[in-house]
Image (cartoon, rainbow, N blue to C red):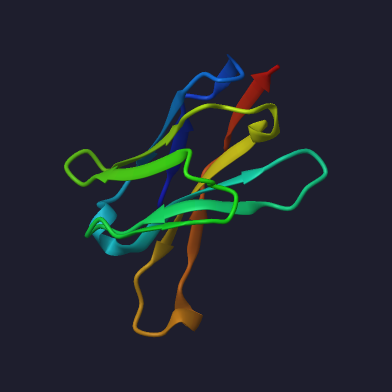
Length: 121
């Protein structure tokens, strides 16, 4: 069973920065990618960014150049740095790992429990 544990959320003022961490219970190498998603109250969950074990990154439309994702393969941790935080960044941030398979239809997603980020104006 794969476990993902997020940490680093909290209450921050607008304009500040935050680093979120996602600790994965297995080697990041076995996954197609590990990513961060967020869900604001009343909204759908949306992609923030993903990273592969090789370091390739993909950012969602919401990233806006203020997010940086990076993986540490030695520690099996994926970080999400958020800069110039805005109140609209307030959301629960989730970590997801997708298994690496020959066919995407057999891929399985594992989710963490999420970490709350609240940005005050």
